Length: 250
Image (cartoon, rainbow, N blue to C red; front, side, top):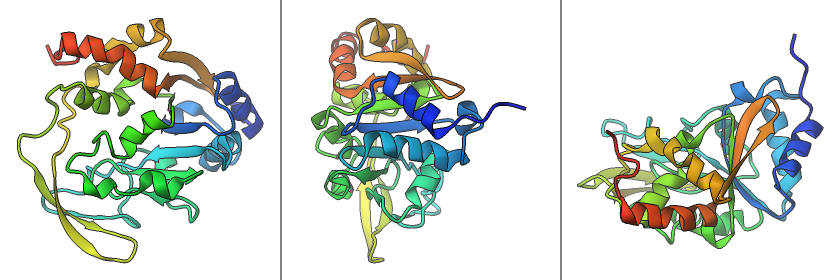
């Protein structure tokens, strides 16, 4: 029988990775890899909240592209589930979090300025517009935690590709319907990210770790990474501008 990992243990792991009070942190995760945690998934969320505190901002990706489709085109900010694992799904159900309105790549936030941070996502025709919540990660010097997952789960790299001019968007927009907190249903045409390159994102690991944009650490039972959002863009921009096909299939 494996030893139970305490919330205190997880907080120590986060501190060792440089996560502090007041940080803005986006979390990608595999609960299975993290291991047997005190209070299970709620214990992991508690450790993250207690570390960044309400002075910071804790974010989970509550993506819904598997559920919001041509045949089921409605995204309901309150009820559409997340397809990104148990931690984001439990997090989005909390009464004290705020979810951005986007049919495919919403973010759910808790902490300082959560409402301001997530506001207006629905105004953009692509999830990763530089003025969207994804672009605001740079403004807040955010960090990305990859807890038990590798760079293939680092959605930030989708944004980085778009910001660097790599052709990753659909040729034509698709029509979806956005249902807000009040129940108002609004049509919206959006371009979707093909996701074609994500399986090759681990090619950037050596570059990012070598230039200090990413570092490994242990979180519970999981091999994990912490990424600096701004530094990641700085490192990858010249790489992708020189070779837009860096992540392309071959």
